Length: 127
Image (tube, rainbow, N blue to C red; front, side, top):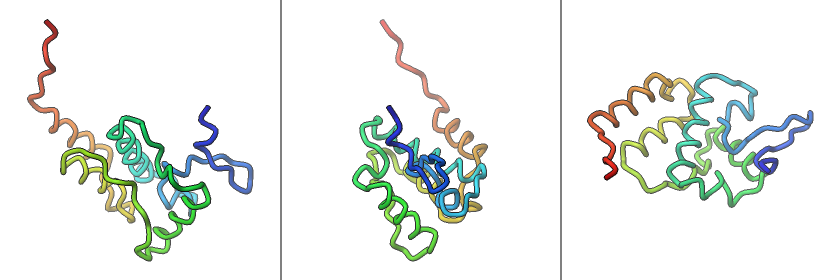
């Protein structure tokens, strides 16, 4: 069902390139900071109510070409379209997609941010 979400690379490995950080795709470097990038893509999907696939207008080869722009840092990288949400959530998502992994937030920082967002939230009572 989800086989189209994976790109088969030369050594027959399947990778979910639409969710992966550029350094994971290009340099095979996997860290918690590359996981933060993927979290940003998943957050984007949630904000779009899972109605859109990341980079749905691009083929896998075009996604790889797009990733190469971020690797080259040539200013040509195309980010995912901005979903409708609050500025602070958009800022969080964009922080997750910083080119430099060291500039991305940690999961602890993301967790604290989301906790603060929920501070004082009381779900509506069912009658």
